[in-house]
Length: 196
Image (cartoon, rainbow, N blue to C red; front, top):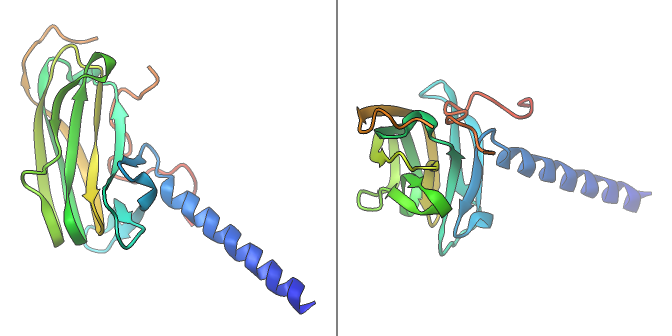
């Protein structure tokens, strides 16, 4: 009887852990990628300072030789032929290597038309909320924009208030499946499943 009770408790514990892991990775509109995606987790939590939900990417191992990203991709119809500014607020904790925000503009066959991952102005260690930005051209032949937060090595990065702004119209005539046509859930207030 005692063995059965211990086994039942063990199975329930594993089940709860599995459900938690699934919920943590399941952030509407966002997914994990990078050179070592299995070494990172993403999620949403309430920030005491901002008093709102924020997204995060965090290392799940003590040592990581590589990086992970919390990202999404969309079809940039509304931004074709313009120069776009991506802004977001970022906070970090115990970032050993470096972290930042990133954005990539892809053309046909995923040809890279523009890219910035803040590696030349990295965020390191523990930092408070600070606004960061990236500015890239989105040529009329652009097919996708991908963006998000990047964490190289171990630590944790919080990410919120993501915005895209057109700073210049380079080609007024440029306006044109499977991907959304605008960024999604950039305030991390939407959920695929009810929060518990």
